[in-house]
Image (cartoon, rainbow, N blue to C red):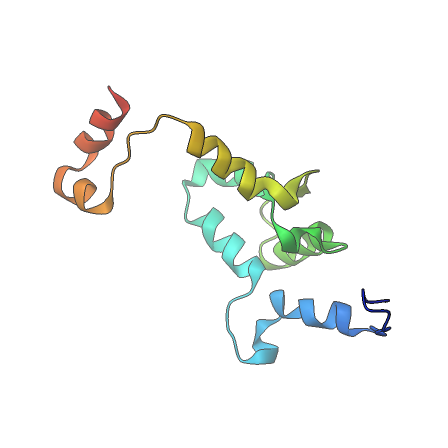
Length: 132
């Protein structure tokens, strides 16, 4: 790989080895992998929704751009829990998804409910903010 100043850097298997910790964090002393986080999120939802959620795992952000990431995550999830129909989707434009969402939210007229207000008023605060 040629740098802007003309120097050349040779990158070997480091390119793929450094990303392996997403799936095998114990290699650097960590405990929770990306597949563990996805599984935990899905199984924390209603039993009736789990099938649909497992089939619609949407990948966004920088790490989703890694070559083969969607296929690898799907395989890791299937190995953890084969009872769910895991499918990970990596759509075009995902590298900018957070910026798109932020710009939409920034342009929206939103009545926010902060944590203190929610704990004080509960769902009444949500309904008041939504105008319902």
